[in-house]
Amino acid sequence: MGMPGSQRTVERLVEEHYVGLYRYAYRLTGSEADAEDLTQETFCKAQMNLSQLRATDRAKNWLFTILRNAYLHRVRTEKQQPRSLDLVGDVPDVLPEPLPDVDPDQLQQALAELPEVYRTPILLYYFEEFSYRDIAEQMDLPIGTVMSRLARAKGWLRSRLLGPDAATLGPRPRRATDGL
Amino acid sequence: MDCRTARHLLEFSRPCASELDDHDQDALHGHLAVCPDCDSTARAEREADQHLGQAVRDVPIPQGLRERLMRRLREEREAWYRRWLARGVRVVAAVAAVVLIAWFGLSSWRKHNLPRLDPDQLTKVALERHQYAPPDRDEAEAWFRKNGHRVATPDDFNYSFLFSFHLGEFLDKKVPCLLFVRTDDEGRQSQVAWVYILSKEQFDLKALEDKFESPSGSHFKSQVWHPQPEFAYVIVYSGDRLDDMLVSKKDRPRS
Ligand SMILES: [Zn+2]
Image (cartoon, each protein chain N blue to C red):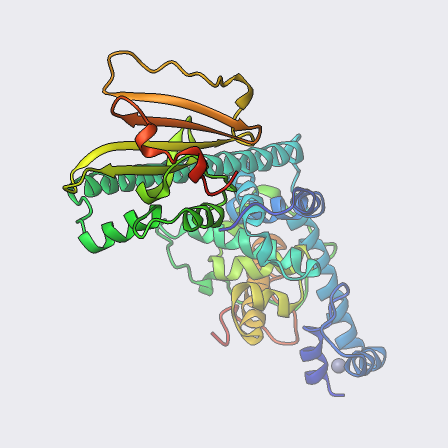
């Protein structure tokens, strides 16, 4: 770890990304305090490792990767119960019309029940509009794996939040675990 | 394009971050325009994504978060610089300690390792500062000149008694000095005289008087000659009188 990066650059990174990073952290942890801690830790690490940021247009990807690594470091010691997505039942083709309001607690609960390897891609996909390539880079995975995890995580959230009949769309009923 | 391909491409077609190239995007749009089934799936998919995406993004930002982040970063910076400074001070202290230890060690080593004397070397050093026989007045003056002292040696001395010449110390200054030694008939030393040649460039010679009071009770006597403005001679000699060391006036080589 070298000397702190330029104060101006660091402050600009905060201005541009603290909202997105905090939301990401909150969805990962489900706690305001943990989310704030993680966001602070992310920026502190960024400040001390600013020289590693080669291109400013990659700053968002870089910061989100730091945050995820910090999060993983925290939960590594926690015993993660591997959860199966088999719990998603058979679902019909169509979403209810209109789509029901999403209950925030239910949403956070559903995310918390998703294993991190599914939660991270769906969060990145939903909220900062990262490309599949970006997500793959942050998770150090092939794009194909990212996409299959995304599809399953989407199915999981839909089945939990948009009604039991809305986990997947398509001409034939599927199980969320198809193709695992 | 068939429906299967269209459903596959749909996964890559996102309103905000499409992963498709223009050709595939156009082909997909072409299919959706003519296939109501795929088109409705695409719409439903997009709506569901937007609906869930909005819900996922809907996280209130705590008040003052930005300020707390900035403050924490500032504190981290300051703490880093304090640690850096403290480490710098520790490094300087450690270096100083090493230097001190080394210095004490060297001093102690030197005390226990006094240089051994080499007689040849000592003789050589002595000869560099004192020129010995055959003593010669011109040679003495040349040697003083070579060592940075322009001198005029006193005319009154008998230079057959010149024994050596060297640079002596006088009031922290190097002063040319002639040593005259007179022996008796049996070769025994009977009288010595040191002649210090003081120049007006080194000393204020005006205060010197022709008559110089010899220190009482000493085995040696002294005289000061100041025959010319540029030089004065301080003569320290043994015996009662200096005359035996001098040439008679008629025999003086120079005037
Ligand atoms: Zn079709």
